[in-house]
Image 1 (spheres, rainbow, N blue to C red):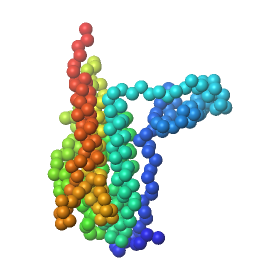
Image 2 (cartoon, rainbow, N blue to C red):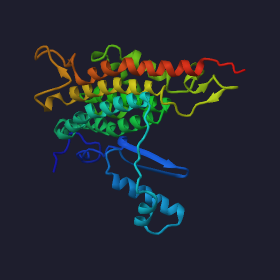
Image 3 (cartoon, rainbow, N blue to C red):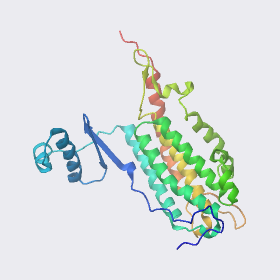
Length: 308
């Protein structure tokens, strides 16, 4: 049994669960009322069987084999992906991949001998694994406001974990995540500006009408989902992934001899982010392309077209 924390929150330390299934890799397709989803790399036979089950249900057919032979013998779910959607998918997929070892590392350490603050920080950071998946799915679905709101949640929870991991039990109970953002300034001096930019997208304010209204059609159109402007959601995710990776390593640095995202100039200096860390490389790789996609999307919807 794991060693109990020296200070108890009223429950024993329980090691976090293993890595979750990658729901961000779900591939959806369908016709009419039939909408199904499978993992992108699932075998073609499985995809046919899933579609056959839906067709059999709506068509009143009893045999899946008959349905597959009759209607799905040449079925191949080939999705036509636009260039913006492809870049958004690749960037979010890379973000998830670069964070995967970070979460695995968090699962390997047992901070229970070091007390409640370290345990609470570890649990909070591990739980963000599911939030990252949710951001990826919302971004790919074109939900810009929703995805950025969850990215802001990741940033707040990351800051909270960093603020309390060497604090007191009282700080675990009383410190609000929204008040913990300034503690990350030692690692990321620009954190205040980034958090402010994310706050602007937390609500559909009048200043953000260009992201949910279409001015190019007769009257004004309402946009529920937009793949191009959600490129901003992907860009914010890359920034948050960088902060999460660095912070997670900083919080658990004492449990590991080697680090991929942080460094020390000397034994007496604090941990600082590495300049050539993997997450920073992703930002450099995708930032220009994602910004370009978002800007083009906004221009396309705000350019009035007079039809004669």
